[in-house]
Length: 304
Image (cartoon, rainbow, N blue to C red; front, side, top):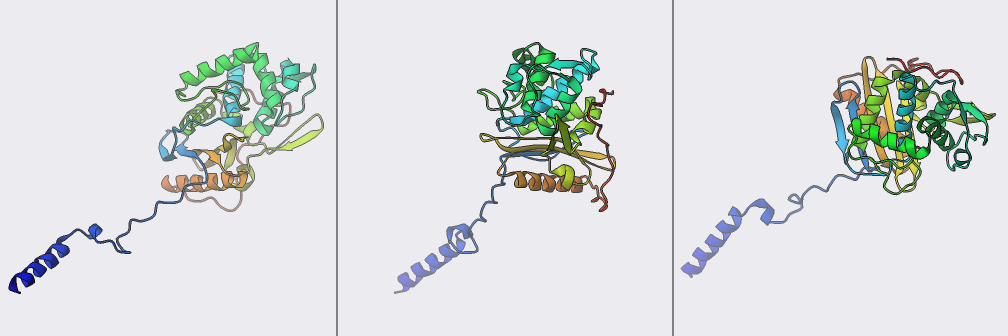
């Protein structure tokens, strides 16, 4: 009997010595994983320094959709800066440009449209027909322009991106990442700050047809003045957004959001968190009068 009691005492001692996780209990259960965000990739950074304030899946390759047009616009501003083109240059609209589907500014085949107006249409209403017309004018052919896009992407450090067209409609082998789009946007805004007066415009009218900029942050977020939305079925809803508070400008890239509303809401949340991390207080209720967009036909020349 004494041996049995001794054995029981030893078992009780060993049970007490076991680590807590060996004895399952409600309190010992691991915390559930955080809910998955309603987007596939995101990154937020200080536009001036590149300091990363938030990132998740920033190197996941995804179809760029119309964010592709930011690189097309970069090359357009660069061509004007280098004296290879002028905003008033007439661009003959080809049948290839005219037949583009999706977002358009409804160009008429065989007509001449200024390069400046085509850039406005590309930036503000994401016009695929305008993007092709710009590509053909600056690159000689669409293929030639795409080659220039990929070359410029490499010099900008966009090592995980590849482009197959100037507009972003579905194409095999076309992909980018949130981090690469951040690199592109920082370079674009740094070299061509006048581009923001284009991207900040909320409306564009051409040929009697008025269209709205799909970037909801221009209407919903004080200090927002760019940059570009994008969507195809394969990618979900994208947004490159930039906003300024005082002397601080942030860039946020959100890729693959589930809806346009979610895209805007999540980008606003990430920008708010980014400014808070930078120690920048929320703005006053009244919206600042940041960069005033130009009138149609008055696209600004790229300034140093």
